[in-house]
Length: 471
Image (tube, rainbow, N blue to C red; front, side, top):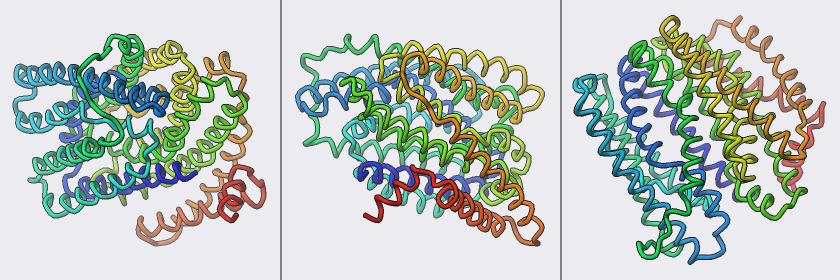
């Protein structure tokens, strides 16, 4: 429980600082410049993703297995970092060649060079080691310190639309500082060496995970690039505003998954079906009990949320935000079925099939809809893709694991969330500013939701948490 609480602090801190920086930069820079910045950062991050070769997922699982043996862990760490370093150098060269050769990138060449620093330091992103070792306290402290400094610098130095360059520099420096902290914290946990490394043994699993990660990126990263190429940078600004707001809660839902993956991996390896069933039951309940009401709130109160966190310039993005409101819930289910069950269980091919189907859906709908509907079309494509991937992963899980999911909990939670609609109608009948309506909406909907779950339906997972707190 303590590990989960530290991880939750880490995730919530990330979310709070992301909300603060996201809100501030959107109000200062507006949709045009935010669109340009997001396109440039997304372009660079795609090269980082390729260079990672699936190590962030593979590393967590393998580190959890080797955690009790420092020699074995150090060898594993050294091998994965060397693989990542080689891939990073290759991708850095390709990145520099592309932005130098193609005239599309020349107008903002200096900005692309700054973002290229993210590619350069990509191999030092070793968060997977600390997650695999369940060092969530360290991750929480690191996040609080670095994100606090970043936020102060952002407010002090980014004051107008002329400060786009400064924004990109500060963002890149925050990533660099994070990775340096990772490296300084290594002594005593692992040692790094170049001798007697067996890189080849990791390649088959990494290539399969890399293929899966690459396919997933087509509907989690490439969509932003497609909106930029097919509809323009302003549409990127509107699209990322809608998507980022809906995705803010995903790390909270994923925080439990992050903590559970090492335990799930051990349960599967030990063939402990009882422990596995309990872990998965808790994870599914957590996704439903948190993901559904938050998603419902995003749908019902999208106008207020968009105005408060992005400003009136982003009003066009409200429909896209409503279309993608249930992203948190469906991505949570996809992570449960894929990252918590299929991958730790060795069913990587099945997970890859699900993501390949997602690629086909994503690319087809994006090319069909973006040209006609801009960022709204991309939102429709994303939502359809995430639902499809989650459904296919669930199909494979049903065939591989004797686990029954409590789907009645989904219907029960949706039923309660229907009460958010009359709350919205009531609040909008008052003559108040969006911020006041939103504050009352959160308080009233959360109070109503938890009161019904606890006192009327006696939801066991929530009651267990309360009982543990008061023991």
